[in-house]
Image 1 (cartoon, rainbow, N blue to C red):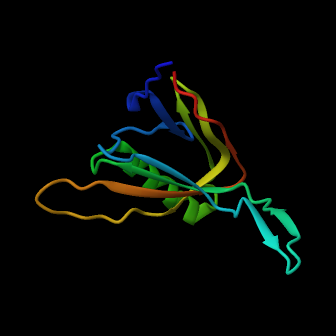
Image 2: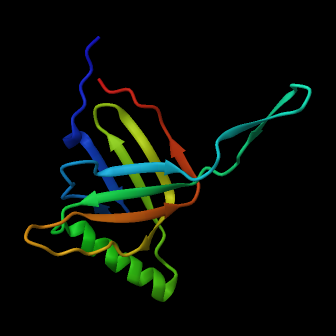
Length: 140
């Protein structure tokens, strides 16, 4: 069976905003915050597993310097700092493979580092979230 991945088919929405201006490299990274399932082995070899209930994650969006997503996230961050009303749903969906990740409560951690030079530089926006849903990857 042959499967195809197309980065143009990976859509990201943050609140009512559709993320655009993806970087030419990795444009989204999602990392679980918890420890998942860990084990502890006793002196007699008995093993116990512990399941971390933390289902939150950290999302990094990497976009072009001129992406409208930079301004949207800055505005949302500013609003959150002023009012505490910066929680937005975030969804990452692969149109060829289905839902990848979603959360009802995501927020911008801090503004991206801004670099200026001879050429435009990417901007990485760090987003944290509450409870998240992870789905499998099954590209067609």
